[in-house]
Image (cartoon, rainbow, N blue to C red):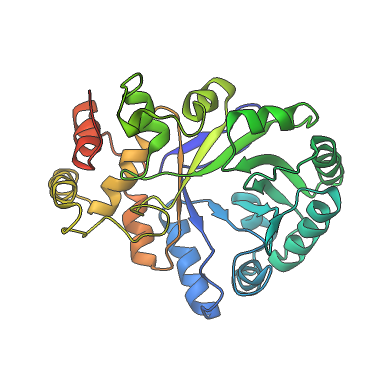
Length: 309
């Protein structure tokens, strides 16, 4: 398992992250098995959010109830949660951020979060309120590091006018088939080609320039929760053919190759899994450090339907 260091911090984490948004209905034993499969594969990072589950903090609470971390185990892992989405609106107010973190800590049965992300942009954000919340949480030892989710460079820069802590991560949707932040740059300056339109104002390059780790969510999704492309022969025949060929070469599954396509990028991205299948966790982790060649990486890119000028 490849691990990455987060610039400007002491944080180091596996480049494959286990997301826990779907565990609310699992029994304790199933959650522990899922957790153990991740740890056995070398994964030390676990992603939560206050909204995951049928009720607020439901998945966090199930994790805390089932895993029951010892002090030693807690120190060896990275727990991340997110805040800001409320029913029908976004809320980056100081009151909501601080209260939600306290609720998350109680649900997770831990004293601190290694990382807290702002969950999608709040256009009504007041950077000074966010800064006040971050300062209070950081000084109290409740949150060590901070970041964002689905933010553009301009939105990040706006936060930086007041926030004093480094913003270390940005969680964004990314897969071989859904990669506008990569594809638009490759097809830059091509008039009339939809792929060339930048939809995030150069987020990939901004992140590399400013030492922010990109965390790829929905790494196997065709689009926005439109189903997975792995095994979808009807819509992605060529891509699946290449995935199968490379999987045989590297002695992994197509899932491992799909992960490797993301982790091969020099931006040092993390891949956030959403599965509750321990076997799928193991398959995904196998792609953590596969040395895909440039030719193989671009071959997958083309096979997914993207234009290479």
